[in-house]
Length: 145
Length: 93
Image (cartoon, rainbow over all chains, first blue to last red; front, side):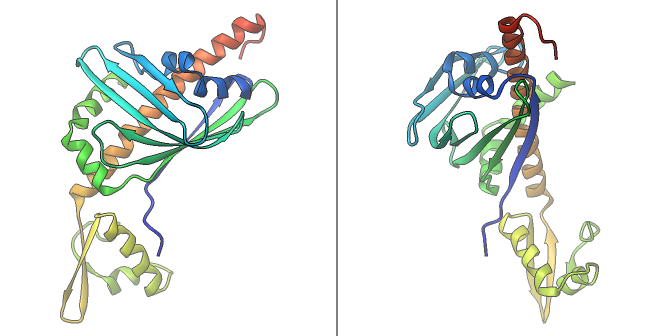
């Protein structure tokens, strides 16, 4: 029997050509602009070695909490302007999950982006909560409210 | 959620669905592996018990990522769309 799969899928339409969306996911300077949610979080560091087996690293800094969240992984599949697959591991985390970003041009000026994050295990839920993600959740909720 | 009100036997759960007992059993196995459900034997009966704590962890964790990605993708959209507008000096979404 196959392993149970816990995943999440998000679709997002962006009014920009597919090339611009792909660049935003692969150019470190652009990534620094959008990988930080809210006003109090920044991305002081983003590294990308864009080749299969190449590594990326994104360092998120939460000025309010004074905390740092660093995620890294390797690229598993790269199809320019179409698809990126990379694994995803938080620093000090245990589990390696996987993110797939698919980009489909909707005409010349619009792109449908589909993000799939999969491979979550029950263990990771437990571990991350122990590391205080509960607090992050609360922050996020109040930020969104 | 048939099982929410209390422990149920596998047969009991299966009788509520239009799928075969083995199919139900397979679904339950998946939930069990994910730590969301436990099964124990009482005589010939197999009793299912929900682990709400694990379910809550899973839900919260997925909600965290749901917010995490939603927020970032919204940033991404804003940044790209404004860049594109700057570049073309015309099209408005």
